[in-house]
Image (cartoon, rainbow, N blue to C red; front, side, top):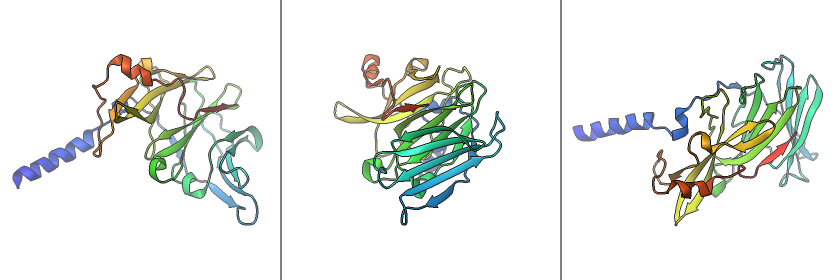
Length: 250
């Protein structure tokens, strides 16, 4: 029994200390906002609209509002994302994602200076709340604040439970996006991680910052270790120029 108890506590200690390779790098100090409001005209009309307002937005100290609108006629193709500053629309773009109460309220709206320019940016994580292979699928939406106060939108699909923080992998004060996809190689499945940075109004792959991509063998039990079964030149085959289902607008 002593051996079993000892083994249990060793396993517990390992689980507490275990981390994925990217988690060794610093993450932003996000400010989280949860106060979404919801207007449902689905039964009597055509839309579902979610909105959230930050009355004293960090770094600019004005009022920033987001509206996410899904309509019956287009819900399976796209919704609309609108940003307003002090009541004036400064961004109105389509997003290939549906927005409903079940997925909007699972994660907060996050605010941080992600690209090190002194201006605070916005990050949304919207789960697809599906079954099967869609259980982990989420839509990641970034709104990067530009010098003139407008926003550029970067979005893509990803696989995660909850939230995967951005990481400063090359210690330059800017935070990189860590993406995850499922890859099959020689009859085995791997979680594949790529790195991206938003530089000069463009999203670029920055795997060279930390010798990415890395691939982690999919197992029934948690696995935190990058595989050593693939040669560096084989890993480079899975370096993706853009994230999965990437979209850009401004």
